[in-house]
Image 1 (spheres, rainbow, N blue to C red):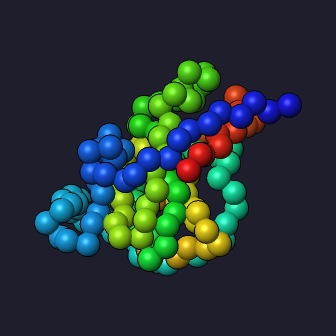
Image 2 (image 1 turned 45 degrees about the horizontal axis):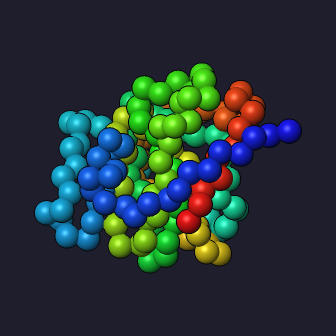
Image 3 (image 1 turned 180 degrees about the vertical axis):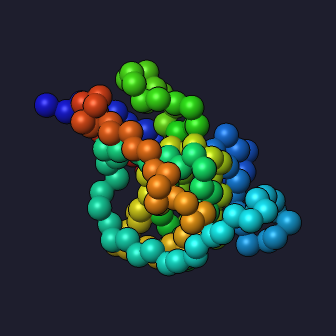
Length: 155
């Protein structure tokens, strides 16, 4: 038997998302992104079909940056701050959910736990800008396996 923890999705604003990274809006003066000298980035388009709004794990990259931009459709993005271990159920209180409405994207702070963005509707395409070292820098918090919990997002 798995317990279900509900997290309410909220609008994406720079202030609300500040502990997790920056909101990247269409206007270039609305977001500032730092780039390290010599760091190489990859840019690709990811396509996701709807898979439900239940989170059984989160990922974190500690040395590779990642920026995600949904293209014209709404997507759900679940995050938790760097430094959380997910060793205890009380860590679930740090989880937040944001609706990315297709007009802005996000740049993650190193170590930010994340799931998605996954489509709220049938599908979504995402621009994914990621530091090249991400493949060797992917920590996973297995919420269902280790804590016996899944997070279900309420829109």
